[in-house]
Length: 397
Image (cartoon, rainbow, N blue to C red; front, top):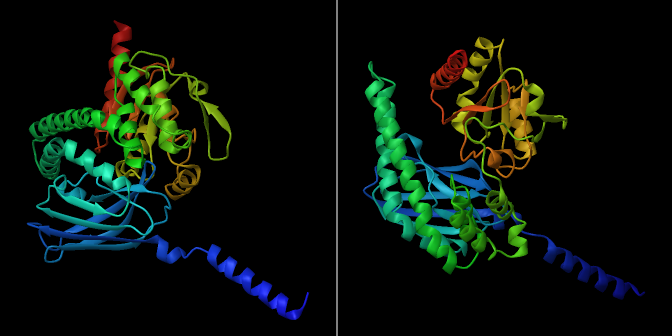
């Protein structure tokens, strides 16, 4: 081969190599701009990205003269959900927008009720998302108002001398919020039959597949909807979760024995809950992205010490392996710290766990005797003490 031919060949190869090299910095940029009226200046808002079900705070922005601006790089290469948060004023999780590398989002709205905000984006999944948001806007607006009131009462709760009335009101409002949440699931069912199947569609079907005490008729309808997914979509994270949820036996209820499930410790050794029978078991279902889960760790240690003679605590994570092991080191989780590495598709689904933190209490003979969801200091200790005392009383009688 002549020198000239060699130089031409090298030039061609270099051009091919350059064309195959992705421009990562450019592709990873995400821009979210907002023009909001009747929203206070200096209000901090946070972007939370969800990698499947695991959320992490990506960026922080501040309102200035009605303008909101987020510029950040996403590490997730596929279309994924993102929300805007500020727990201090009641901004809790809400389906809002879909982003991917290169996304440009424009938000316009009036006031803090973000169920009414208009979201414009160059991500295809946003088109379906906006249809779902329109169908559920009335319910989500009610949930927003309830969350704002819950946030206000929670602040009063910590300062009040007599907390009983506030606690009861918080319980009532939480029940109303949960009821509205399940109504939103019903609202999207007709759209699941009509709209094309994409990431937003699959997330809504996933939400519906988690409905408690599902009737045979509802399960049949959801299974029929799941058949609209392609084989590739069925093999995705949410596709597998949907199929698992719709084909599980009914989740464990109070008085039933726990299923025989294999879990692993951080070294990869297999374990079963049955090997710990003989003492009460407190199962702590958690995720490293769940702030209340982390806040509960000191009280869990207090409970372990107070009931060390007849209670064992088992932490069960839904995190991917790397995130789980990293969090285990960070928070010095020793003792029984297990994971089936199936996210929400394994033991979480079989126990009917819909959110973290969730705490299950098992009797020494392996039966479910109590369940508590959410965390506020003192509630967990009381839950364990009163449930065990109640069971002992029943057995004596």
